Every structure is written in C-alpha cells, then in structure tokens.
Length: 107
Image (cartoon, rainbow, N blue to C red; front, side, top):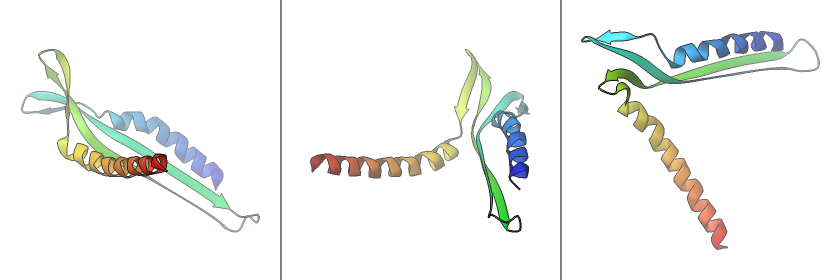
C-alpha cells in the first residue's frame, strides 16, 4: 500500500507545476495564462499484519488569477473572489493568534 501511495505522490508532484500555470486561453482576442494554487496530500498505513491497511488522498486547486499582456509586458490580474475566499479565513486565524500572543505577553 505504501508503495502505491509513493507512486501516486511522485506522479502528482510533476503534475502540480503544469496545473499551477494552465495552457494559454484567448478570450475576446486577449491571450491569458491562468494561474492557480495547487496542493495535494496522500497518506497510507497498515498494522503489523499485512491484512489491515488503508490509504487516501486529496487535492485542491484554487484559481487565483491570470497573466495577460499589458503595456509594460505581462500583467497579473488577480481573481478577486478567490483572493477574498482565501484571505478572509487567513485574516481571522491570524487575528485570533495575534490576540492570544498579546494576552500571553501581558501576563
């Protein structure tokens, strides 16, 4: 089982870079290159006997924007909805962590 998961993880690693930057797409005469955040995770396990075991995996792809041609060359245009979807939870967690650090330093 562990060998299978290692083989899958190795194949996904090479796919990750291809998925982060997609193939160029032309929309209304403007060529764009999509950009995404990509991550995958896999795991496996078994007990001492070879009879029981399991494994699993998953991944996420979040579209964060596109590269387009501008006056000064390539310009990155972010996907505002994805940016908000990622930044709001991150801001909440960072705020809670910062408040706990401040409380700990006050003691």
